[in-house]
Amino acid sequence: MLIYGLHACENAAKSGRRIFQIFISKGKLIPDWISDKYERYINIVDDLSEIIPQNAVHQGIAMEVEYKGNCDITTLKYAEQDCIVAILDGVTDPHNFGAIIRSAAGFGVTAVIISSKTSCKVNSTVAKAASGGLEFVSIIEVTNLTQAIKKLKEYGFWIVAFSERGEKQLSEIDLTGKICLIFGAEGKGIRRLQMENADLVVKLPTCENFPTLNVSASAAVAFYECVRQQR
Image (tube, rainbow, N blue to C red; front, side, top):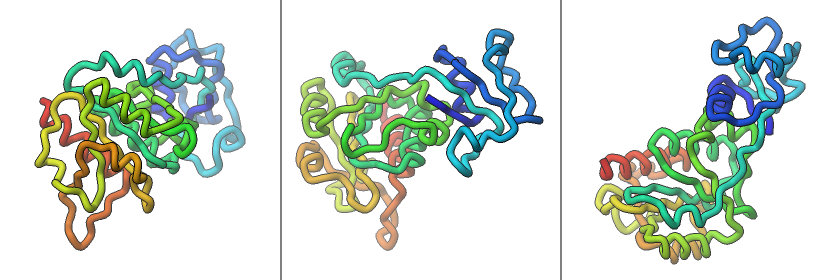
């Protein structure tokens, strides 16, 4: 896959991902982390916008790397206590998806679970928005989120869904142990089946006259509260 941006490229290289090509904008300094072993992959190009999405903030670097691949949900069967995972129900905006992965990496979230039918796929825009976070969070793609929730329950996870009409505020519940947080698409929210299969529906402590947050902001707040309780 093609990724771009300083942090995304540096973390991909340091994680050991196989590199096929490195593209540097003409006139830009070669970053310090590009050691001798990467020199043969470097291509100096006049215009990176011919390779990556238009108007992308590439910071003068892009790389063609091996696709990391998705993990299987069964890997969570042996998750340790105080494990946090997230389910994204219908989040299609790659910037939101990437921002959630970045926050997940920052707060030590183990995995982000997405639907193969209704969610955004991992692409170069997601990788840039994640700012290197893709190297630290497992992405699990499933065909049926409801079945995934049931499987997580079998593995000992407590399922928490988010809604402005939640029964309690997030800080009022126990978030220690194995926790799965469900976030819905902006506008539509979490779909009915996912909501019905949650153990709890909670809300964030936002102002009554303006309760809505961007889904990536909501995820960051929720991850923080989980980590605060668990630590």
